[in-house]
Image (cartoon, rainbow, N blue to C red; front, top):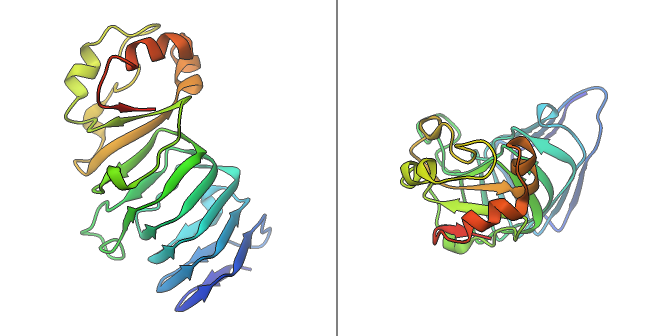
Length: 203
């Protein structure tokens, strides 16, 4: 049976999204969560975030969340923990119904592990990003030619192999250095020796 939170405002609640054998979880539409704790233990395929406002919430990802799109949500003052891979945050595809109010600001990812996560049409200065061994490339599309021309350890073009695949709204991408290094036959330390020379990298 699907679990649906919609058309309401919740404050100070704890939402446990655990393994639901009978259905999916739906957050939204028209849902506002204020100062709530959201604990997810489900894969992205079982979690659907429709237009929802998360205000000053703590989002605990207990099971790695892969390929999940948060761009229908507006996130302000939230704190993330846990592992997120290939997720999208911010104002993305605003021409599609339900995405016009998406966005992210004043959020804290310092206790999260992000890999291949993209941020769209937002002010990155308002976000607290995860420290090394994660690192964030600011303006990856504008820097793609330079990034592709650098001499990287291991196999070439290890960071921005297909920059044209990212939408124009992409303002930053965060990676997990050990994951990247393993994939491309190098080490986090060798990777960092290149990154530390670039002034548009945050780690």
